[in-house]
Image 1: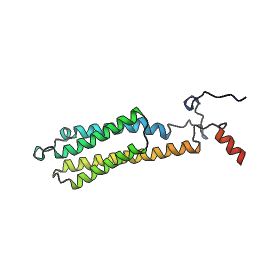
Image 2 (image 1 turned 90 degrees about the horizontal axis):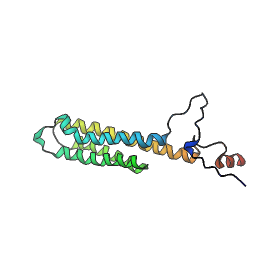
Image 3 (image 1 turned 135 degrees about the vertical axis):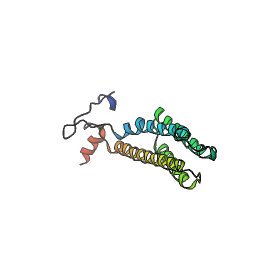
Image 4 (image 1 turned 180 degrees about the vertical axis):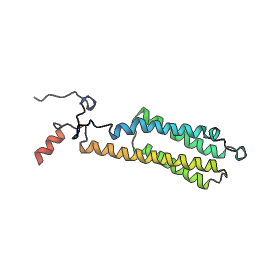
Length: 165
């Protein structure tokens, strides 16, 4: 009769790597909270940038409506990622919003340089956050399939691999 282990992956001790260092946070840990917090901060920035940068009053609210819409999407996406782990769809959404802000900065025709460069810069940051999120999601997903660092030498996957080789 075999014993069933009730240990969870978080209960397993981290063992030193080949050069004596304990590995840092994995792709899954980086993908969840830190990236979500950065997305929420970028969303908040899009809410307050009109007042912080002193947009000209002659343009009305058109540029700020674009930024507010993007800010709502990014902030709610970050909030959803914190409450529960999300997949690549949220990262692709943030990437698309970032690209949309970049295009809006160049083709929006708002006239003021401060608006153009704020939208392009914020769009680049959001696109970068989306790309990093997609890459970390791929890495976390791939590590889980390959038997990443949390897999023990005595796991059923490893035993099966040793038997076939």
